[in-house]
Amino acid sequence: MMKVAVVGAGLIGQAWAIVFARGGCEVGLWDGDPQASARALRLIAELAELLQDKGLLDDAAGAMARIRRETALEQALADAAYVQENLPERLEVKQEIFARMDALAAPGTVLASSSSSIAASRFTDELAGRARCLVAHPVNPPYLVPVVELCGAPWTSPQALDDAQRLMAGIGQKPVRVRREIEGFILNRLQGALLREAFRLVEGGYVDAEDLDATVKDGLGLRWSFMGPFETIDLNAPAGIRDYCRRYGGLFESIAREQTDTGPWSEALIDTLEAQRRRLLPADGLEARRLWRDARLMELALHKRRTARDA
Amino acid sequence: MMKVAVVGAGLIGQAWAIVFARGGCEVGLWDGDPQASARALRLIAELAELLQDKGLLDDAAGAMARIRRETALEQALADAAYVQENLPERLEVKQEIFARMDALAAPGTVLASSSSSIAASRFTDELAGRARCLVAHPVNPPYLVPVVELCGAPWTSPQALDDAQRLMAGIGQKPVRVRREIEGFILNRLQGALLREAFRLVEGGYVDAEDLDATVKDGLGLRWSFMGPFETIDLNAPAGIRDYCRRYGGLFESIAREQTDTGPWSEALIDTLEAQRRRLLPADGLEARRLWRDARLMELALHKRRTARDA
Image (cartoon, rainbow over all chains, first blue to last red; front, side):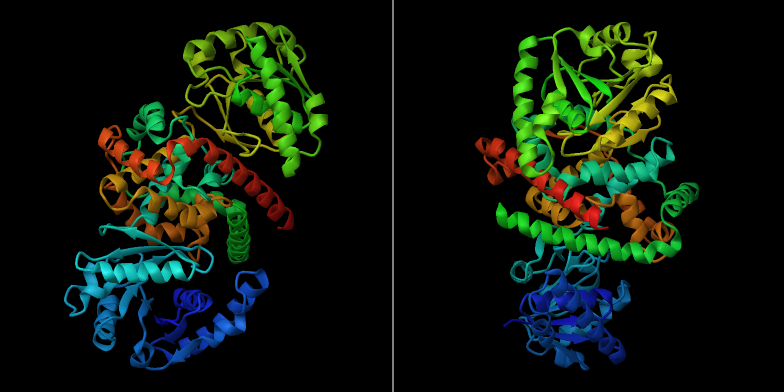
């Protein structure tokens, strides 16, 4: 059974621990604060029970038995084939922990960061083992949302990326390869493009936040939850994607000419959005709504699993 | 029971007929070509059976009994409280049919077009009854995808828009209000913004079409299928959407500065995408995949109905 290390026992580290253990890996969990890793282990156990109740984890006790809390980083890395780092999103933090991990880990161990916004080249360039370092960016929470963006620095070896890809696919995640470093990787760039247009439409008085959300959740977002945007347009013209581009390229080009502003989101616009959202959901309801969201994500994960089996 | 008219019996007209009949309306179906409306009636009956089998229509025979084929436009419009027009997407076609409908329909009848790209102001400005004309843009197929974009011309009466909104909500669709005319309305502008970034990322060699689709269907698209983009970010920062904008506005502003090109999609890029898609799905598999897509949309519609009931 493959041994992995999870470095940092906050929310993302806890989530990764359950993902790896559910996938059959032995997990060494380490945090610089031993109290944090002890608390994390209790939270992970609760989470494992919840996932088992929902049908998203076969054997909670078995998974928990595969997670070991380590008090020394050296011990966590010993024999680990793969390390998933989850410390705070600050460059100097990443630089320091990667230097320590590179010095401690065996030569073949892959060192991956959960970083969402700092490219691997910025914190691995001076390391002897920089060829085995990469970013493996999850979406929160990874036990419900399978995509993991894998992005190496220019010097990351294909071997390290292939190893990470094989591991992720083997434990039921969905690895995607980002082939050159770029700010925001793929997911947040797509999200950013859509959000900018959404903000612009509210700012221009074309639609309110509630109706814009409905346009996505009761329209545009349905196909995207099982096909993605390219397959969607490939099926939306008789002869496929080229045919689609010929039919609708002009419309989208015309729209794009109005989508070029790059300034910051204005304070007035943020006030408008905050006011519209708080009318729909008072601030003291945010936490309950997050639990609702996670319950919906669980139901959707089960639904997708069932329909994929039937397909 | 409300009487509605469906003008034009192509794919969209057929879909609207089943949506209205399923919702309890009496439907008069008319097409300039009587053979087309006769054929449409047979296809609608098959569709009704399919939806009944899938659990998305309680009583196919009852719904079919509410659809009447009309051979005269005047007859179809007689007593109709609402008309949904579905002729080809050409300005002169819309102008001509709206002039005819405005001359024939009773004064209180709402006249709506399914147009996806022609604003109501362009084909209603000279009509005596222009205040009752608007666009009600569906997503195909509307019996599975509930969103309907309602967009009036500057002279459309609030009454006509309210009537359309009430009707759509009453038959189980999800009307959204587009408060000023804009090219592409809301849905296609959001789609266009995301597609442009998707094309750009493939063109730049950052990701291939398959992995980009996976980033959406196994990541970004999951929440959007039940929440929409604003609620998503509202829940993704501890104190809500304002907090989110403060934390991530800088990242998205930085990304936006690289998202300003407005040229047409290049032929080389379209070749690349066509080649990548055809490797995943040969051209002779497109039709079967569309049936798969519709089956998945049906399963998703049922899933959303169940989870909404449980909530």
